[in-house]
Length: 165
Image (cartoon, rainbow, N blue to C red; front, side, top):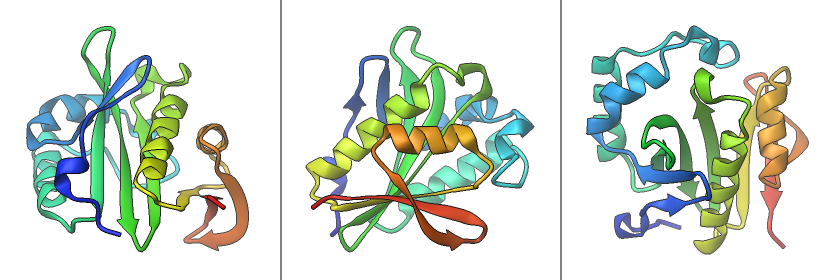
């Protein structure tokens, strides 16, 4: 299933606005994602503003199934992280990242639940996330969003999923 671009709007939660990603978010997001601890399980290093700008340009021009939102904290308007969904054939593969200063507040779980609800509203019956087996915080987020671990492992990460009956 392909979700038209005009259906990618702001998703509201009690504390967050999930705002469709724009190239203009690169400067603020470079600061949000600057902590090397965010790469402990996914590898790599923090991207510079210029690297994020180039990545965001690719995402904006990418396949129709790529959906990306930044997380804006409603209390102060600051960006705190992002969520994404790659949609193909009735399945959404989702991911989330919350900057270190905002971790431990339940924001990732709130955003992931909102993203799963968005998937439901767009008739995406299967929602998948791949999580490093040592990443307890991401496993907790997935569980709060209604996903369950499977026996499938891809590139060292456990497949979590929620299949709607």
